Image (cartoon, rainbow, N blue to C red; front, side):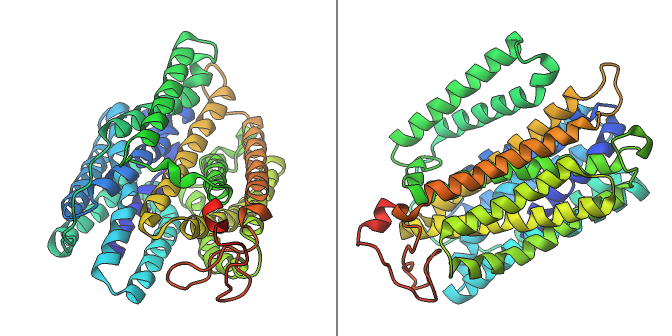
Length: 480
């Protein structure tokens, strides 16, 4: 049952990137505007993840999960019906609530299953999302190519509706627990601040970076986000506990995830568009939607291999080495994308290396965050990491739209080839910055050599060998 619900997360993600050119054709909008079909659910996911996690913490979990699924299905209907582009984007935004289901699924697995089975179930959920997205990319592209874009969104809606029906029938209620106060001001400030920042990044090139709209909206967004940070640090039960990011080692995990998420979606948001652009345009390969979806399949397949690889590396080397190595893999792929993208095989290889690097970073960062968090705050720490991941995704997608808009001729048409060079260069630089942040923040004095076993007795990331004990003083972990 939980695996079926995890497919909702995969479906929400897989109908984004490969269909951007098809969405542009369907609504007769430029590519940078169609890019919002990818950015919008990511934006909602940034806020929905902690909101659903907090609202579903306790006896309301079943109701919250079902409510989120209803919104996802409603959003799917809006994307599939022949409505204006604004209604389509609203539907994609509602589908973003599906990205916030993972904390509820993990919490349900922990409550409903014995500890060993729960651990396996959580691992299966993660694999389901990664593999589901990978399979969903070519399937979405194939349906859009053969039956039209609306058919692809109707198919995604049908899958989500099936998950809703199954969840209503068998999803167990949560164990009784005392309700926790909901940080409504924090949710409103975070949502408004993130939305304003993404609109500024996504439309700044079109409106003009020195225009009044950009300056006012950008300034207001920064003020809202600053106010959110102040609220989160002051209240006793914040929506996202920023205090859990204190310390160099957890900070390394969070910063690296944010930057790699940004670099990742610079590539994922532009690669299918490049592949489907006409071959005679000077910046395209003339591929179909199916082929563009297949190009992203190596990303997910390599990502599935990265989890075990990251765990094995984490038993032998320091966390900063694993984080930096994954980030440098992403930087290498982005550099190749910037310099050479003349054939489909190169793009497939770029996607595979990116998937390996991104998933290595995400797996290692999750281990670091869990290892450094107090046992009772593990869920909150992972929620923060997940939010930063989605924030990086959404910023990367918005920046892709900005670069493509800047390279599109004033009278319309396709972006110039130099836009993809800029995207690759920015992605490479961001990934290198992530590697430096991981290496410098998670240094030896931050507990990077060995951070000791976790409360369950499993070795923490960076412990040398299985079952390695803490090598630092008793307070080292707290200081980390």
